[in-house]
Amino acid sequence: MEPTTILLFAAAAVASLFMAWVIGAGSSGATPFAPAVGANAIPTMRAAFLVGILGFAGAVTQGGNVSEAVGSGLVDGISLPVSGVIVVLLIGAGLMAIGIYTGYPIATAFTVTGSVIGVGLALGGNPAWGKYAEIGAVWVLTPFVGGGIAYGIASVLPRPDVPEATSVPILAGVVGLVVANLEFAFLASVGGTLAAGGATAIPFDGTAATVVVSLGFGAVAAAVVRWDVGRDEAGGLRRFLLSLGALVAFSAGASQVGLAVGPLFPLLEELPTVSPIAVLLGGGVGILVGSWTGAPRMIKSISQEYASLGPRRSIATLVPSFLIAQSAVLLGVPVSFNEIIVSAIVGSGAAVAGGAGVSPRKLGLTVAAWVGSFILAFGLGYGSMLLLDL
Image 1: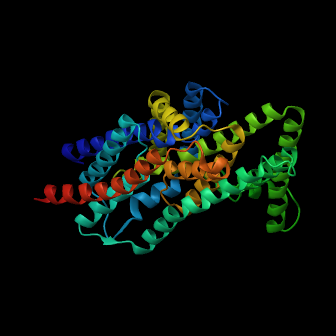
Image 2: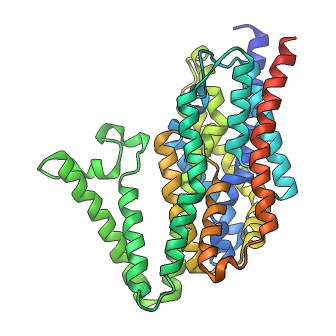
């Protein structure tokens, strides 16, 4: 390999690490624990520390699906060259850095997706209409699905005819059932999920055994939370809230790492000595460092400026956030955690005093930033590659 090519690869790797840092400092590092911080369940700095570790774990164990989609699924008929990868990562990271500096949560998924499509089309690639339809459906439905679920949960939790010793354990059971069926790379040899792995120890039909194990996970989670809330309601709600925050932080790492390292995946064909796992590890480290060094500012912005959340409303926010995030990971769709969390906050707020505590001006500016960042990233990617060709 020529020295110039090696230097370009090194530049792409540095740009990817910078992008991972920006993700950790921004959407991935800020949004998962922001509702918990808003509910005074955990201090800002401790939340940033935990989200870094959990994001790293999610990136390494679940980051492959979205990484492959970003790397090769957004434009057909072309593989991005090293120069295109550098352009994509610099545009995405630059726009995200602007969002962090200004305090407005620009969506990483929108900036990276827009820049990848723009660069790929400028190089002569063909639109991947099927993937665009899938991504568009997730992006459009997220506010309605996430906000709707959050609204329903926030409406039920304070009702006197539905005691929290019943409602909260049911939510925990649903979450436990989903956790049992999350796909992990290190469990591929036993079916890919905790439920499938546990089913290997049950001496009857595989599908039925998987269902039994899944229900068992849900039942155990519900029983533990019921016991905890029963003996200490305030403490039990806080601990359940922190558990949800941990799951969302893990899911954030699994989804967002693909936005940082996904563009590098096509380049690995020319670097057979570098494995995808090594690339995911590098992205995970970048997210971890970004969460520790840059996330507190965004955590404060989301938790304090969007709404003043109590523990019940925060639980209503994080349950749909976790479910949507893991659905996107399973589908291999780049998704915005800012969009997920903000939509759920608005949904839960609509159930509590008609949305009191949510700033309409802040919300409007955020939505405008999402749409504008996608359009701007597409235009910058397309124009930059045309200029490089000239």
